[in-house]
Picture 1 (cartoon, rainbow, N blue to C red):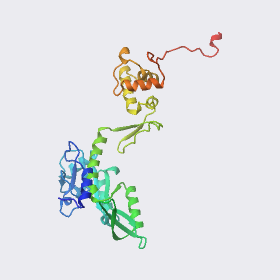
Picture 2: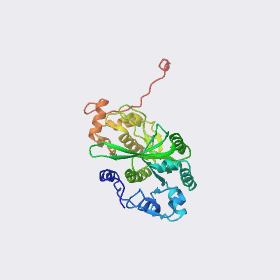
Picture 3: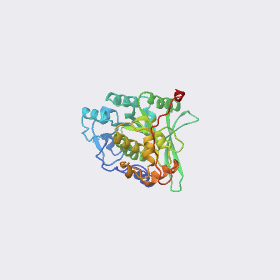
Picture 4: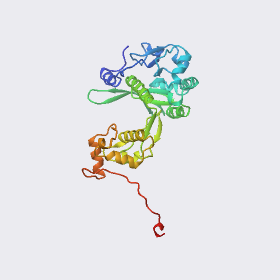
Length: 321
């Protein structure tokens, strides 16, 4: 089933839509999307005869390899974090904003989907007609010389009503994603498929405070966001260390001593010249180069190691007794 669009456009989006490794057919489409007139054309997908009827979605992206032929099975997919996608192209989005989209979202929520699982995926460029006040829908056509031209379709829906419908869609528990053209849809679906798999492998995203040299990584949605406020923040700020190595050092020390590491312990381990001499276990990501960089920042000369001594400091006036 061929994908609409010219050869140049299809070739570009085909590279974006590469099939992920070890794919177990995690994209499910409603049977209506397999018709010849459908704008969605993808290979290696499962087909469901009841997907839209039960869930309100044209496409479901799921990590489960279970069947999709009954409402109970579809519910299991949703409970496991499947993403439900209602696809709208060009004028179809504008004309369905008033009522049809609400019905789709209602079905998604009725089967147990959370807000982030309810997606309306649209394509096209939407602009106001300055004369009539209605929505103009643009279809982009790229050219070999780098130009992009647009063919505009008129609608009978006011742009104000369209903007209100889009805004309220979010308040009603769904989210809208607008792509440039239909050719972009398969790549978007494949990338979401990768996202769901990647986020599920790591249920927590740890973020570090805003440090000038090491800004914290962006936190993905669908994950718990946890700010790091312990000694790792200091170690991560050192040149050549960063959050990954700081966490590896933290976890190794914690396992070695059986308790939460202190900043002093982390500094001692980070800049020791010869870990084998002190029988310090190997820390993932920490080699001679990293330790040399930390030692230069302390600074320590060759043959020197950092040590923390437990000293008694008398309180004021105690030495006068």
